[in-house]
Image (cartoon, rainbow, N blue to C red; front, top):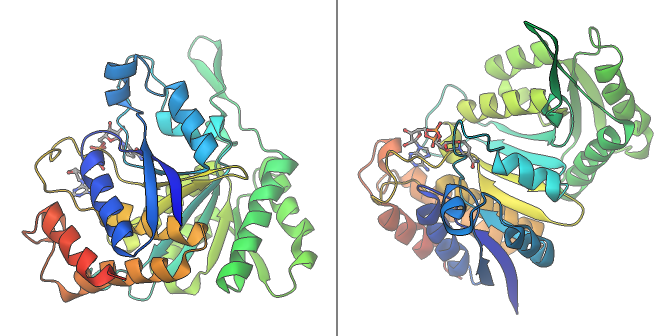
Length: 334
Ligand code: NAI
């Protein structure tokens, strides 16, 4: 059996890390026919827009996409392609598993937590205006519907992955109405999930707790801005954006992506570390039910990193993207 999914190679190092990830997935024995489409600065040059309609249609049709980093042209009035993709496809879950990577030494070992960030509302609605000179208002919109669906999604993930504790991160002590609404949605469905422990914590307490004792957290669900900030904080706990995967998921489709940028400073030189996108490939394989292949690919990446011999420059090694990918493919082989 062969799947047909969408590939958005992206800009800068995007084509390099995408090619590496496609090879690594193929090495597990899962056959995917990739439909390649454009988005980002490259698409602007070739299609006159950063997000061609054909790209959205391809993801809608194939339901699953793999996306390299995208450069949004600065200062020319372009909105972020990543934000537009989430909005157009209603990818309401930002899934960010954060796991210590063997061989990548940081202050804390044994971190294994997951952040679920609501991806469509909050301060990221993009509704800002200036009611008077020198004054700006930004609307922060939260709804029952969007808050409840992200919490439900997190609960379903917990059941599928055998996780036991879900923490709602908020600031309902100050923003009683908006964060209060999110917290109420969380508490409203608690009784439906008897196998899960529900607790909640103020976002400032969580920030401190994550830095001091990240191992004490399991699953964390939160609105958009808190999720954006804490996802990157957590990436820093395990070695940075180069080693954590990400996915944007909705009811109709899902896009798996590296969370680092397009790294224009090293693009085209074979120096990029494909770890983050390969681990996003692991999420993709799990999402489509290819659990054995997912496990094989994750172990292959972790084995290569933990052996410490084949490493790209960002992790202190001298290996090229190709050499690192070769080493992963050998270990991921079916
Ligand atoms: P960046 O993540 O591209 O680069 C920051 C530093 O990390 C650079 O020194 C770069 O060489 C290094 N780096 C990043 N990924 C690496 C990898 N896989 N292997 C080795 N080294 C790596 O962030 P920056 O410079 O702020 O952004 C560059 C462009 O990327 C901008 O146009 C920005 O809008 C875009 N961007 C796109 C994202 C996405 O599509 N998800 C996320 C963040 C930024």
